[in-house]
Length: 590
Ligand code: 9MR
Ligand code: ZN
Image 1 (tube, rainbow, N blue to C red):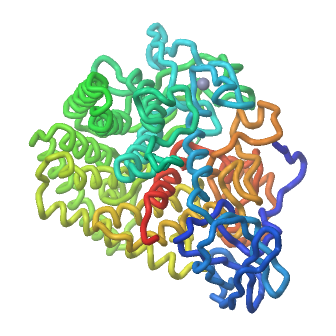
Image 2: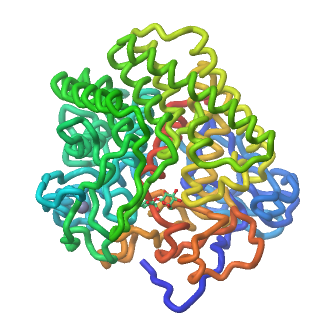
Image 3: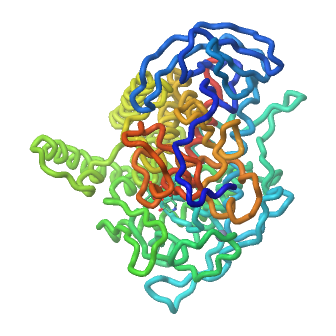
């Protein structure tokens, strides 16, 4: 990894003006090169230089959020497997890329293996980790922040991100993306052997070949840790971290005191939700684990009932790890009620869900009135009118809706009108986002404000949305739209970057990720999704950046380890990319 000291980095810009998915395309996929340089035509060539196709390039005009004037050339008709590159009549080229059935397999498996590399509390051995080994870390007991006399031993789980903290709401969100991918696209987690037999896809983790498929084994590592954060009364600690972020050292060198921070109602609700969902998913493999999970979920749900008021989270004085504060918990409770209903079929959870929705609708009406009167609107007011389709760590209403819609597959009988409403909400949102993608030269379903801290999560949440809408309708209508979001992550974007470490020709190599820097290894640990372009980099990062005024938001990106608001990694930025990639691999019109 490189450290740029005393230099201010310009925005990243690939030397390849022809933007393609640097990992590649499945044979049947729509394939469009987006060219950020004037041209009239392009040639698709085999890696050895033989041209196989010549196509006209069509100007799609100036693109607002990238600031690029783009030309598009469609080469979908080429389906033959191989390594290719593109060259324009103006002499501009693309990076090399593959077409083939397996073109996306390595990046898919890499993005899942990335979770293994974030495991806390166990040795990463060469057999699984290759050269990216390290010793078990964060093994000490944690003190309760509010009662230093009480200690709890809670090793395990994934490091959240570039830092070594472990946070419940962030973990629950990442788990939900992964478990939804497993639930909706089981085919993506299988491979066809040379003898034509289907077997479980594996990416070489310690549990590979055991009773659980790799994805569920990886998720169990996080769930097992999360179970330890539940306190005897059912409340769940918001996070287990040291008081401040560690310097850039290896995780086993971080020996500072660990703490359980205060219980929050968001963490408790997300915990109940994810444990309930996991109980259903793990049941066919391990009944006693499934029972343990649902009992834990019930206990936390009971805590929620006893504590109907919002219990938010703010870092206490003299501490400074991630906050993950939220302005309300109604969406979290809605998700919990939906998963509890789906997992148990008990009508009381169904009633809770409908009551939460009724309150939400009232809040949405109040919000409308406030908007109409031009009054200032607070975070709390917005959160109370929570989105029914969002799929993020701070806005989990979409998880609740999808849980309710999938409950039927678990033998429940959700209300027909409510089902119709939620299905319609996903359909409308997908249609709206599809229109946004249509108008973007790079086909990203992104608005200006979506280019925020962690914008690649927003991009991948749109990939998820397109997948979910199709799943619910039983169509492939948005297959290519979902694929376009993935292409955007993997190279079809203004910097021309492949945002997944270790993949692509113009790749992100210097993420804000402690072990990747501290291990002294030149190559970066592969498979991580970097946060991505951010139209409003934080002040800390601006000291390392040399950006012209009014730089279009899609261009606000530099591959610098110093810039955490651009180039950090997190579990919940990888997880929606895994989901979107699973949707693509599970197949559509091919
Ligand atoms: O992902 C979070 C991002 O959306 C916020 O804008 C940012 C500032 O509050 O915090 C991010 O979360 C960080 C978390 O607090 C600690 N671990 C690293 C996360 C990614 O930067
Ligand atoms: Zn650790």
